[in-house]
Amino acid sequence: MVDHKINEIDIVKVEKSRVNEVDFDKIDFGRVFTDHMFVCDFVNGEWQQPKIMPYQPMTIEPSARVFHYGQAVFEGMKAFKDNSDNVFLFRPEDNHERINKSAARLAMPEFPKQYFLNGLTELLKLDKAWIKSGVGNSLYIRPFIIAIEPAISAAPANTYRFMIICSPAKAYYTGKVRVLFAEKYSRSADGGVGFAKAAGNYAAQFYPTSLAQKKGFQQVIWTDANTHEYLEEAGTMNIFFRINDTLITAPTNDRILDGITRKSIIQLAKDNDISVEVRRISVSEVKEAANNGTLKEIFGTGTAAVISPISAFEHAEKVFELPDVEKSYATLLKQELLNIQHNLTEDKHGWRLDV
Ligand code: COI
Image 1 (cartoon, rainbow, N blue to C red):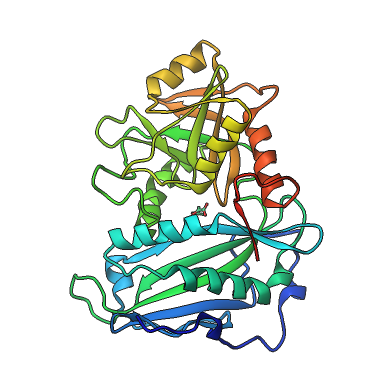
Image 2: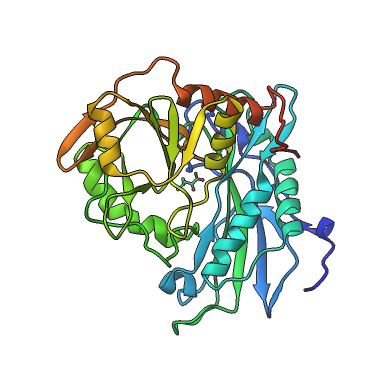
């Protein structure tokens, strides 16, 4: 690999920031982007000189492989600001590790860690004014890699582009989420790409999710493709079930995303002496618990979604409404997570990275 000195990112700054044009109280997730973006191309087997430049449209040939074969992987991460104007990333090394696992599965080159972390840091320094302090505010960060080689034979590309764009964010889901348990469609299969943050995993969910939305459910909880009996993940979130006082979530495998919020919540639950079982959980177990009153909560976890309580689920045309619960685990764990992310509490697991 060419040893570019990473501090030598080529930087072109905007002439005038757009930050004052944005109404931060009225932010729709993922529609407004900060002043700058990070770009690094992979050419002739090497990552080239990284660049930061004003956020702008780019020219890619219509024959670029990403448009034809979907060689595209991404990450979701967030930066937070505390009340003293310090900026923090949350577990960024885990995102780096995961984008490289995703990339390897799609026959794409891995991106060097030093480039990833320095690129993020430099970008956040430039776009710091876009990060608002206060719990509930964050900057959503979207690193991604696409195959840009102009060639349409069905083979992995030789040229790629790694980029980072950033978008100020508030809540992803407002209010409680109603979900449908998948009975027909599948998100992923054994040996497939379900564990990867591959763009196609999301596209494949849009149609079945739109059918669920027509019935009044925002999300589908995907079940295993073989039997549709075991609950896996919601596509934008990993899923936790609270039966009595135990939290249960599916083990990660090659069908399920290894969520960074998921594993943080497992740790925080343990820190609070909440019993956690990482094991397969079946539709019948959840329905039985709903019927006998032991199903106390269902919630999703994800970077964008944070923790989203689920208020109802449907399976086999029957709707199960979850009653409101006192001392909700979702509320407790969300608060603890946000307190760590916003530097309001001790970070005993070393999850924050001071930018
Ligand atoms: C994230 O939580 O970062 C995700 O990737 C979900 C996204 C599709 C908004």
